Structure formats: C-alpha cells, structure tokens
Length: 265
Image (cartoon, rainbow, N blue to C red; front, side, top):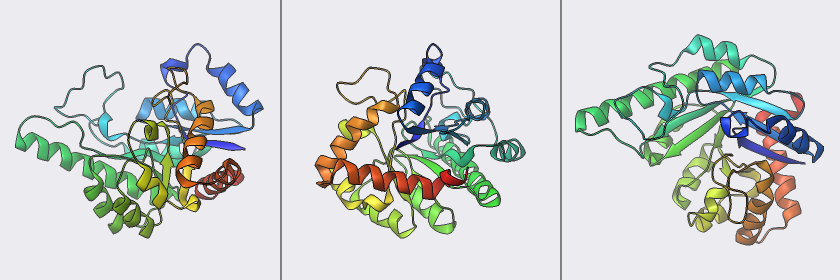
C-alpha cells in the first residue's frame, strides 16, 4: 500500500477524469488524503470521501483576504476563519486532519504597515486553526514557505501533532521540528530544490509521501501531477537516504496510518 498524504483531486484540473483516476488508484492499492484550502474546497474534499480516500479541511494562508493580489489566483478568499463552519465540517466521515493551514511569506504586500498586518492576520488565523485541531482531536497539515522561524515559534507554544507539508526547510529546521514531534511530507519539490541534507536528517519513522497534485510534477512525468508520481519520489528518497524502496513504502505507510488514524477511519 502507498499513501499520498497530500493531494488536491478536487481541483478543476481533474474534472474530466477524476472518478476514473480514483478508481484506478484504489485498484492499485493507493490511499489518498485530499487537502482542503478554503470552505469550498474543503467541502469538495469531504464529498470525495470513500474507502481509501480521505479528507482534510482548513484555510490555506494564501486564501486569507488581504491587500495582496497574486496573478492567476482562482480560489476564493476568506476574511476571517469561520471556526464553527470548519468545526462542523471536520466531524464529517472520513475527515482525518485540519489543513492546509500555516504561514506563507513568499509574497508580501507593498509597504511596511501592510506587510505587518498581512503577517499578523496569518498568524492569528493559523493559531485559530491550531486551537480547532486540538478541540476536535485531529492532526494538522501545515503549509510553510519562507516562514520557518515564526512557524516553529508558534508550534512550540502549542501541543498539536501533525505534518509539515512539502518540507523545504534546513537541516536545523528538521532538528527543531523533530523535537516537537512533527512528521515531514516529501514530494516532487525534491527534484526542483536541493534538499538532500534535510532529507538525510529526517528519520524514515517521521517521513510521509505526498504529491501536492496537480502541482509539483516530477521530471519525466505528465505535466499535471497525480498520486502515481509517488513512485518517482520513492526512487529519489531511496537514492538520497540509501534505503530500499520496500523500507520507504513500509515506514511511510505506517507513519500515515499512525498520524491520521487511517485504520480507524
């Protein structure tokens, strides 16, 4: 069994073949967690739940309403975190996590005051979602880009469990997050960014496989990513860590089941 712990099969890129792809994944002994990024996509993830297909619900930091405008955006923004809405949704069958939550400082509004307000709002909504995860006893799926110091500071003040999705931090970030008990999601970003030292520092007991599809397609794979690209990610992890494919699959599957209670869902 292989588990893609971070996919977006609800996104419009899969509208033409979603059901066929899910059927093929299940037949191939794959399990998938579809990750929500706002109210609408979280609800869509819940609607796709079935045997071997799970959901996470949450508000992505880039889907928080702000003065920042990003070219090509299509997802709906939310001015505040609707705690009651996400709490109710989190209790639906097959929901195994709160996410995608976190901090993203890659883009910044112009002007110091606007930047400070932008970061402050992200932090407040992130902490609201951490509180929700504690209340409903679910792990978190964390997005972090250009914000590891602030992220780790906040996580160190809380007592959540979860995974750092699409991990791009340093070896030192790995060490700090390991002390807090977090898992690390590894996907096709490893073909674009040199993360060898960080991956070497992550024990297999704390590693998860993911794709972030339809994004981050590995080289020599189709342009629109899908969970079957995990095969290439496993090969690259095997090369970096000098571990067998079988060991990587076994450990990461055990980790996903343990973190997200998949065997109990």
